[in-house]
Amino acid sequence: MSIPKDGGWWCCAAEFGEHEATCANYPGNGKHKLIELPCFGIKITLTGQGGGGISSDLHDDDEDHVGCAMADAIESLILAHACAGVDVTALAYVAGIETSLEACGNHL
Image (cartoon, rainbow, N blue to C red):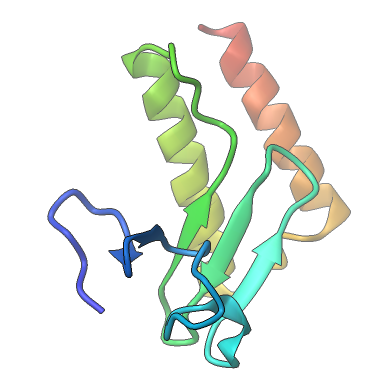
């Protein structure tokens, strides 16, 4: 799998974590682990080799650069924690995500 210059994870014309079952990168193929959090549509796919991808509903079609940067930063932190082995499904962790987003929203 190659990493495009824009930093996103793409293959088979599908965003990483949303592959069809026939794709070699499909999370259900035993090589990847899919984690779905109960907030903001956050889906994390871990490759099992220290990397992964994340998708969420944090981005808005009409958001400005600050909102986009906020969403990217929070997604990156969540993905980094998941790759490092932090239990991002823990209720306290999910509450922390929600609190962080609320605090960011208060500053926009």
